[in-house]
Image (cartoon, rainbow, N blue to C red; front, side, top):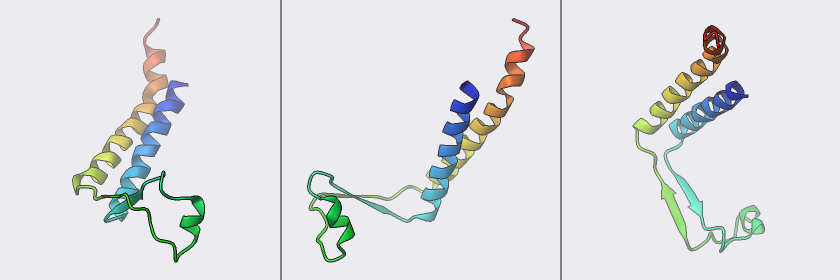
Length: 86
C-alpha cells in the first residue's frame, strides 16, 4: 500500500512539474460568479474575480526532481522492508 501511495505522489509531482514547465501563466476564475455554461459559451464574459498564477522558473524543475526521487524511493521500498529482519 505504501509503495502505491508514494508512486502516485511522485507521478503527480512529475506531471505538475511538466505542466508548469509548459505554461507561462494560468488564470483562475472565481467559482461563485460563474456557471458551467459560461465556460462553454465563447461570447460570455469571464468572472469578475480572477487570479493569475505565474510559476517561478525553479518550480517545474523542483517538482520534477522531487517527483523522480519519490518514484525511485517507491521502487526501493520492498527491498528496504525485507532487509530489516523483523
